[in-house]
Length: 261
Image (cartoon, rainbow, N blue to C red; front, top):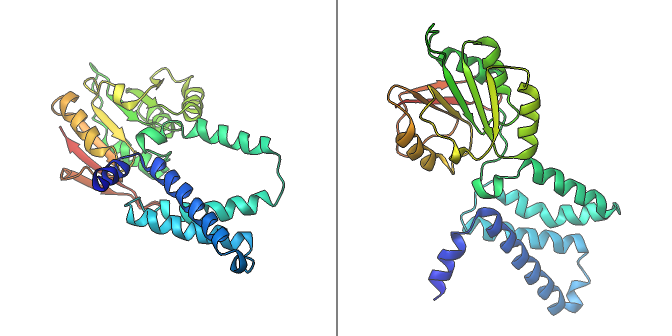
């Protein structure tokens, strides 16, 4: 019975796993503090907060969470304890939560955080667009377009194209919509990238995360037409060798992985 329950637990979304581990660590820490009444006086609250963080980070490591979860698990309670010392009004915490929710609306479901492409990536993408043809404009879609930087640059440099952005998070969508509303060759949709039909595009660009790449590849194989280009920034598709890799000399050492469909 234990093994099926463990498999079910590990199949949950990473944020849920992290939260459950953090709650369990807090409960164990509280019980330990009560059990060790006489010795517990030797520890300040922040000591217990770090003990809880160490336990949560250790369990998260063995649970297979991504490495970037470990510092979050380690410092969550210590940071909370430190912040409470400033006696901020609860309204500020509510405001911060609402803002983060609006920015990272879809991250819980898609496990795709907000990544912003560098200007050097924008310039590299220009050179990858199909040549100008008088009878048919190029069509380009940015899946998870964020703040619209890629679309804004391409629409300015290659005005012969048709550029579409898809964004599910409310604040980035609104930002990119307002940024691109004056460009007639750009359109931004508030939608999930999984709802976008890729059949009508010459170039499909995505800067997401490792998590959805295999599923996105299957979607691209089903929908994209022969001869079109699928370009992923930084994140590879499992077991799929790209036709071309372009390394970008930017702060994040980005690379463009290119497949011809």
